[in-house]
Amino acid sequence: MLLLGAAPVPELSVPPGFTIAAIADVPGARELAVAPNGDLFVGTSGDKVMVVTKPDSDAPDAPRTFAQIDDVPVAGVAVTTDAVYVGGQFHVWKIPYAGGDTRARSVPMTIAAVRTSGVARDHVTTTVAVNESTLYVSVGSSCDACDPDIDATRATIQEMRLDGSGMHPKAVHIRNAIALAIDPQTHALWAGVAGQDALPHGHPYEIFDPVTSHEGVVNYGWPYCYDDHTAAKAGVDCRAQTVPRVVFPAYDTPIGAVIYPERLDGAHAFPARFRGGAYVALHGSWHVPLVPPRVAFVRLNGDQPDRPVDWSNPNAQWSGFVEGFQRPDQSRSGRPTGVAVGRSGDLFVADDFAGRIYRVRWSGAR
Image 1: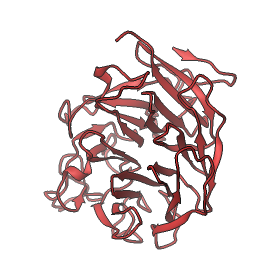
Image 2: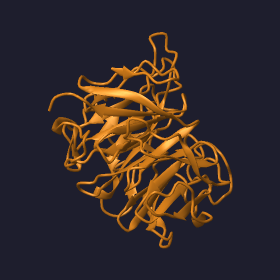
Image 3: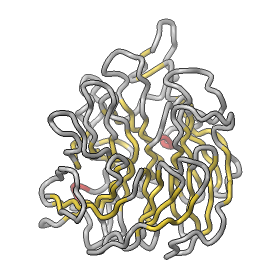
Image 4: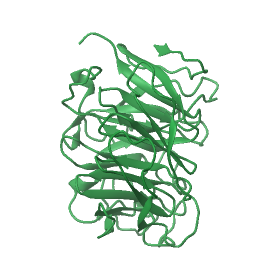
């Protein structure tokens, strides 16, 4: 069921018992983060970080500009009790925050530098995620397949303290880990990764993996290795490659992810069978035929998927949760990007194609 607002909305579908509504217009909406008080922060493909107050109410407030940062795109955003963290193209920014702030209370501060070569090329979004006292920052490669990259921060996930100090790589040879999510149960960092193009059609599978469940610096093999220790060219030794625990079809392009809490007392909390798993926003492909955009649901048991990878079937581990962004003629009404869980249990989904924020809500029997 799709609840219609004043503006046109895509022809979206959700499982029985759920509704979906467009609650805000935010051009270029990318990553999402819910503040402790329930406000919804939105990174964008421009220079603005937006905030939607009362997103779980019957009448959410219109989006407001929380901060404007000259580091386009300011796509990544994470919120704690006292700070908003923003991933720009060349820097990670920190803004002091108190619950209810709708405008930055001071000038954003640079706490870390990424893409230190200064070259704006290919994957230019920076995703951020906070796990207690640790900040994770994902920086995409400058190319489809190259090594070494043009600087040491590219094709990595960096780990640092909340003030930006102690920055070091947690994952390397990871082409473009746009979708970062912290599991509220296990505190593991999961990463959804967009793979390279110049391989046999249908490969590599897109990956989703609990990065911090692996010891040390994790090597995902790009651009030499992919899938299950498969070499991209003859003579490559892929035994050191970390093999992912979850895969999606090639070219699906994970952009955002969130792990739904197993325990949540909100008025709109999802039923048990939809909790504790991952919701992954898949942006869809530019490859022909077009792989459709969607939000997928992956059942998890701790840091393991409910089903192991089936290397002959990249559709085995997930089910569609929000569908309908692509029409039968392959035209599109939207492409999902960020996802976040609201304080009352709603799932928020950003769409950078339509420039909207959607709210998925459980309204069925329990």
